[in-house]
Amino acid sequence: MLVAIPSKGRVGKVKTLEFLPSGVVYVPHSEGDDYRDVYPDANIVDVPEEVRGITATRNWILTNTEERYVVFVDDDVVAVGYWVIGVEGKKKVTMREPVLVQEWLKLFHVTDDLGYHLWGAETTGDYRALHPHKPFVWHTYVTASCMGLVNDGILFDTDYPVKEDYELTLRCIKEDGGVLGARYLFWKNEHWTTQGGCSDYRTQTIEDKAINDLMASYPNLIKKVTKGGSQYSIEIDF
Image (cartoon, rainbow, N blue to C red; front, side, top):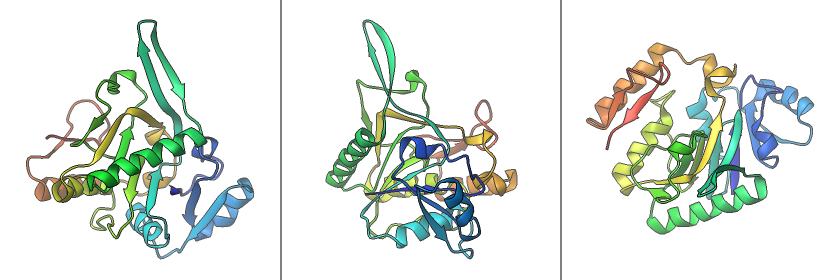
């Protein structure tokens, strides 16, 4: 299993390595030496400079590994684990690499058994978003903040420089019949507060085009969030 951590412009800020020290960090070739200087023990892989943007980078990773199971995670994770909710209240349990990797492998086995391509975790640390009584759901969004992908030739759509994970989710639901949403695990990132990464080129114009393209390709399933969330938020409606 490959744990892929795409990163750009975040030397010294790759918090995900604290949780997944054996993860492979993929960076632009021009930044490779800078990352290696700061993270001498990490596995840093240079991505050719002609590979531009997160969508193309994800596809380059998929086509340059022989691993069948690939987990994409963002580089700015701040919390990962699960909640224990019982008569004595609630408790957040943090997961580290050995346990987390074993849990991900289980999710891949279930995904394979279902004939699906994708699984994903809840991308919030709020206990109210988790559902231990109903740990799996088949029609949900899966974001590449924490996405497991069965690497058998499926790729991200390069027409989407952003929202590429939403497009792949909808495509897999349409073609496979579903995705595996693991609603008992959470994966929380800093997202909008960290400079670098997609924030270097993400604009409202690019986001609006991606949302409009999704709405045209998957009618009645996508709507833009007008209240709450960020200016880039969308909602999938099943």
